[in-house]
Amino acid sequence: MSRYTVTTAIPYVNGRPHVGHALELVETDVLARHRRQRGDEVRFQTGTDDNALKNVQGAEAEGISPAKYVERGAQSFLALRDVLDLSFDDFIKTSSDPRHKSGVDKFWAACVERGDFYRKSYAGLYCVGCELFYPPDELIDGRCAEHGTVPEMVEENNWFFRLSAYQHQLHDLIASDTLRIEPAFRKNEVLSFIDSGLADFSCSRSMTRARGWGIPVPGDPDQVIYVWFDALTNYITAPGYGTDDENFRYWWEDADERVHVIGKGIIRFHAVYWPAMLLSAGVRLPDTIFVHEYLTATSPAPETPTTPPNAWSPAPTRIWPTTSATLSTAPCPCFSATAKAPSPTSRRTTRRRTTPRRTICAPPDPRPPRLSTVRSGSSTFGVPPKPS
Picture 1: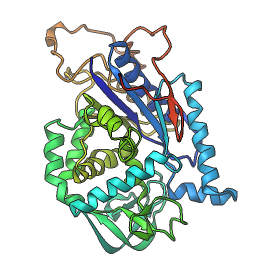
Picture 2: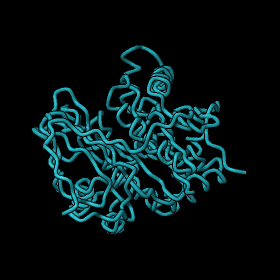
Picture 3: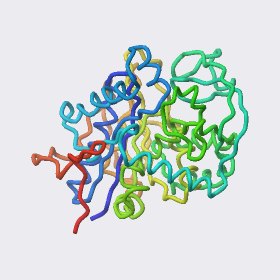
C-alpha cells in the first residue's frame, strides 16, 4: 500500500464553472478512485484561486466587495462535488482559508533566507487574464495567445524571484524524469522553454494596483504577493505547510507519489516556476505533472504530438482526437511508466475510428468513496485521517 497525493489546479472564480473544469476534476477523480480501489491511501485536493486582479475587477463591476465576490464563486465550484459525484478530500479557498496565509508567509520567508528575492523597477506588457508579464515575441499580432486580448503596459517596482538560478537544475530534473511531465510532447515543450533561457520573474505587485486585495509581502506592506506565487503554494499549505507539520510530512514530504493534474495553458507555472520555488524553499517536488488539453466549441485544429498516436510507448495511454475539437484524455492509471512494452507484432490491427475510443480502466466501485470528512476553509467536512 502506498500513499498518494493528487491535486487539480485551482481555478479563478471570476467565471462560472464550465466543461473544462469538469474535465480536469473528473480526470483527477478517476485517478483518486483507482488508487483507493488498489488499497492505497489517497488525498485528493482541489479548491479556488481567489487573490487575482481579475477577481477584483469582477467584484468592482458588480459593485460588491472582493471577499463576497470570491466566496460566491468558490461556492459554485464547491457545488460540483455533488453535481459530478466527486470524491475530493480537501477544498481550499486561498483568500479565506486560515491554513493558506500562514503557509505562504512561511514559504516566502524560506525563499528570502535562500537569497532568491531582490527589488527592481520593471516595465512590461501584462495580461490580466493570465496574470503574467509577456515579452513581445510571445504575443501573436500583439495579443495574448491564450485570451486574444491586448496586454496593458505596466511599470512598477516589485520583488523578483531568481528563476534563472535554477535553469540547469530544472532541466536535469525534467530530462531525467525525476519530475515527470506527461504527455511526452509537453515535456519537450518545457525543456525547450528552459533551454531558451529563464528570466527572473516579478513575484509581487503594488498594493495600489491590487486594490488592497491579496496576501501582503511580509515586511513590505506596500506590496502583495504575486497571485501565482501565492496560488501555487496551495498544494502544500492545504496539507499543513506552516500550520500542521505532522500532516504536511504525512501527505507531502513522506508521500510515495505527489501528482498534479493541470491544463496545458498553465504548464509554465507548474513545470518551471513551481519546482524552482520549491527548490528555493527546500520543499520536496511533485513527482508527476499530467497535462490535459482543452475542450472548446470552436476549436482550431488539434496540436500534433511528437509521438505518433499509434506508436507504442510504455507511457500511460492517451486518446488523440480525430475530430476538430481539441481533446486529450488524462493518462490512464492502468499503466505505469515502467510497464513492459508488448512486442509490436503482438498488437491487434483495428479499423480506423472517427471518434475517440472509450477506455475503461476499472469497473465502477459500487461502494461510496472512502472519505471521513472534506475540509473547506476553517470548517471541516472532509480530509482523510492519518492512520493511528
